[in-house]
Amino acid sequence: MTAGAQDPKTPVVAIDGPVGSGKGTIARRVATSLGWHLLDSGALYRLVALASVKRGVAETEEEDLAALASDLSVEFETDQSGDERIFLDGEDVTSDIRSEECGRVASAVASFSGVRAALLEIQRGFRKKPGLVADGRDMGSTVFPNAFLKVYLTASAEERAKRRHKQLKDKGIDVSLPALSRDIVDRDRRDSERTVAPLRPAADARLLDSSGQSIDEVTQTVLDWVAELEKGN
Ligand code: DC
Image 1 (cartoon, rainbow, N blue to C red):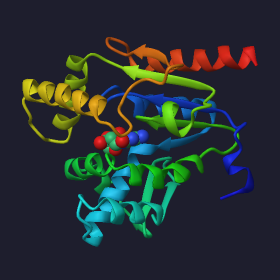
Image 2: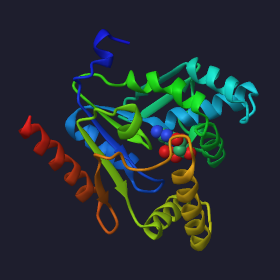
Image 3: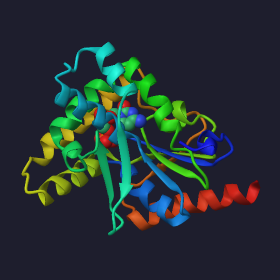
């Protein structure tokens, strides 16, 4: 990690929100447009989950999981076609970490404060010049409390269920839409009611409801906010 890696003056755009809000897509677009670095913090929780499965650490063992998280050997690279590749212990796990099972274990390990604390410094290490766009659940509230811009991206549960339904269908997985909607409402409740790092907007976050808006429109709103804040500085 370079000396300037944790420079608190390097600007951060924090994009948080619930599952299906589109934050991953928007964060990537905004980062590309600004020419800034990108942190997909969910990928780190997924990597801890995958490492735990590979090393036989039970998803209930907080101490062992925290040790594993602080010792994580990960690399994020961009391949020749511009796609991001993620490596765990030198092995390309880009698609492995996207499985439903990995997401389920990630959600379990993310509920441990020991794991969250272990990932804190790793996440802050992504703050490099000229700037960082970070997406997750607690980027604005905990990881980068002095972020230059904090966005809390939402969409109606119905719209998020529809997006998830389409994503799964594109992968050849057929799940009923009402079941997905129920799942999303349940997950929202669990995520916002849990005691460790509950999902909620940072006090100074700008709320952005992406229901009925295109990816381009939402991206443009965030870029307009960045420009507005840059002008004010
Ligand atoms: O965004 P995602 O589906 O890749 O996230 C995977 C899991 O990690 C999800 O259950 C929520 C959790 N997570 C978290 O608790 N905090 C973050 N900053 C990012 C993800």
